[in-house]
Image 1 (cartoon, helix red, strand yellow):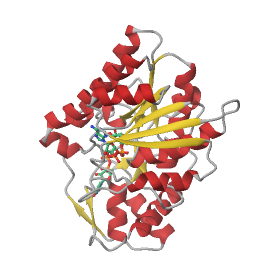
Image 2: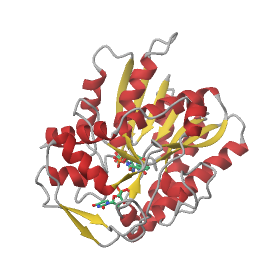
Image 3: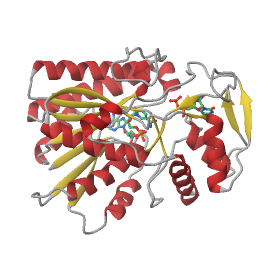
Length: 344
Ligand code: NAD
Ligand code: UDP
């Protein structure tokens, strides 16, 4: 099987390449597989390609190719899909900073929505009709009931979230237009952690927006303390509750979704989370305990646009993909810390 990963050198794409190489390698009856990573490197680095190859090992049943390019370049995408005889696409490429999307909505829609349309045009031209798409729990907006099921109403509250929602709708229309298409939109909750090798992980440029990379940068001494955005939410300790999921579990969810997409047509949206909520302070304390480090915190005002509590109903992922998360908060905190240390 030949699979194109757009945004393949990014945080989730790189872990998925590794998981995919393992799962494709285990397929009986197929000899060679090819994973093609396409990325414009706007938020990742080329060194990741060699790190993925190191983890895969010389005896992998998969070949890995990297192509530097932009998903908005339809001509390039058409060439890649055709020359590499691609069977399916896992579409990660996109911009993902909520605050930046509020300041630069046009850039976000151009990159995320226009980029997806360009990809779909190339896929149509090459008769490739299987896609797994990186969506987000942010499409649910303020939860009306918890845990969040896939049938919860969608209402994104910022341009980043709306770009995901628009893409989901476009993909739905594509599936309605032709019953041969198969699209699985994976709604990620809060991916954290890193591969056990310490070779790949999350490396945000500039000040991290997300909690875990901020914690690791405080622990390593790069920042003095963590600002905790509010301790007056209606939660047990007053801080925000999220569904943190180990990125390796998430990556394996993509392999399961790809397997599903090769066997079933139509459009699906599926949550990838653990189903368990964890507060900011609970994550900080777990990180301190399992890694034997100190993470000073300071309580500050709530962050605009944040919700109190968000966690997944994971039943559909189990029923549809036969997938569930296996790693716990300890695994997430240890691997994130190991990666941070290996990079400094
Ligand atoms: P990331 O920034 O590490 O990876 C995205 C990759 O896409 C980067 O390598 C970047 O260089 C590339 N890229 C961006 N625009 C491109 C373009 N026009 N052409 C080619 N390459 C392009 O982010 P990630 O955390 O790995 O996220 C992957 C996907 O998952 C994104 O679509 C993101 O919105 C989505 N997602 C992420 C999270 C999260 O918390 N990390 C949560 C929900 C959804
Ligand atoms: N958070 C925090 N300090 C930070 C970053 C995040 O207190 O520096 C909190 C945030 O308010 C939320 C949780 O950590 O309750 C997760 O935030 P993140 O940005 O990682 O993910 P989100 O769920 O907002 O997409």
